[in-house]
Picture 1: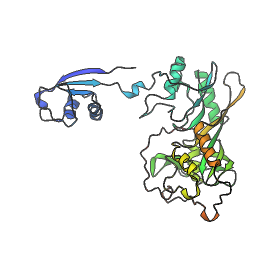
Picture 2: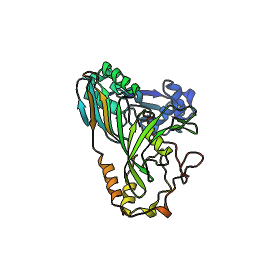
Picture 3: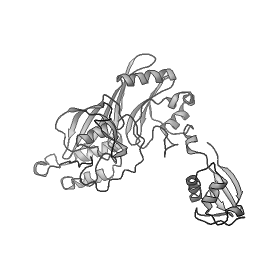
Picture 4: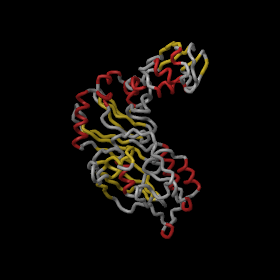
Length: 356
């Protein structure tokens, strides 16, 4: 890891009367003003051996010590000792059970602590493979199976399988609402023209996206489903299930907030839902052709504990609950948001991953 660099300075009289951050920007033109301000706020800039604020006025003659930090992006490909749940490994590929909360690839806001950093620690030779062998991604808060290549040849082979749609990817999801039949969503996905940080069904600029879904269990106000991807667009399952008016439980981006039907749920279920802080989506099965042996391989893993607990709470519900007159109507307004979402917040930390 790179260490900070101490930069001692003396404020010249010509900068007298200016704010500290403005004076530092003129003395250190290689650093942006916002970056200097963040260092000041973090206590990494001392004015006459004392902490200060960006608005502090300087008059000339003051001694300043700036503890310059490395560019976060420069740390993106540093190896880090991050525990990995490895399901399969040989000289060519790695199959990993990614936990919820782990970002796959470094990006703005997540330059360290990613799966890529953990892969580089586990197999240092991956430094020579583009993206440390990663060929597909899962969202930060989606758990489950993911494959990475250990050689460039294996990576090329896996990418071609992805392009040919021969990689089999199966998910388990818990959604709001009662689905009554199995089906397929064939709707193109692209950037949401109203909110560029989100994806949406976009029939003008979207790319082909196909998701097959099958009901596994139906509860009073939820359905447990199996989803199989035919394509791999950004947030595909999450967008498609929202399009079906059956958003994923816990989804902070494509879900809803203010119309939870509390009157038809037990306290046990309400408590379980309140404690579930991510989208209920898990990549449970992965199948592919081994890039070296040409074997047809597949792996399947159990649900994570948090989804098991949520399902148990749903099974606890009275099986005789009938919605009929009290049916929940998951309506969407003209902006594609669920009615009741008055406090919608588009400022979220997401990685625009490309697998679900």
